[in-house]
Amino acid sequence: MKTSINIINKKAKFEYEFLQCEIAGISLKGSEVKSIRCGKASISESYCYFNNNELFVKGMNISDYGYGSSHDTTRDRKLLLKRKELNNLENQLTNGLTIIPYRLFLNDKGLIKLEIALARGKKLYDKRDSIKSRDIDRDMKRDLK
Image (tube, rainbow, N blue to C red; front, side, top):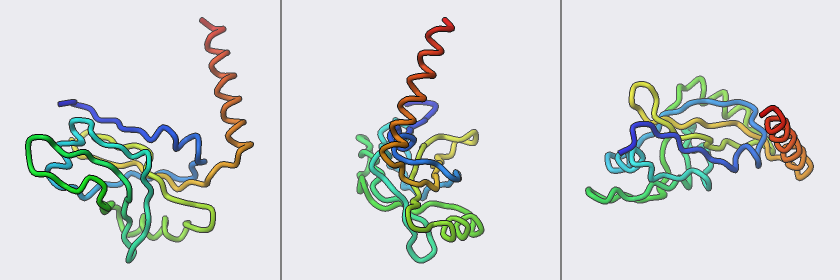
């Protein structure tokens, strides 16, 4: 098993502009925790939504743990945040904004956390600007070596 887990949604920074980030706990079953600790999870196709003033993540894929009981791999999982944080996110959620999971990681205490971001989708020209700045940064680093 891996000792540190850091599963990142690589497309998120390219597709969205992050406005605010929060760290949330996740309500998981035992076999899901073991699968995540083995690194068998994906958050690339997932998003968050509100249902009855509670925040859920949909589309997060956690593969079956091979040695124990099985679970539904893509079920909706409840995110654990304080009421004040939930109300703040729900009030800021307007047209064009969404909540996306960015990073699934293991914190210092050994708990599995999900970093979520309030984000706005980028337009095509914004994506071109990010590609251009990334290329310039890479060329500058290359020249320094």
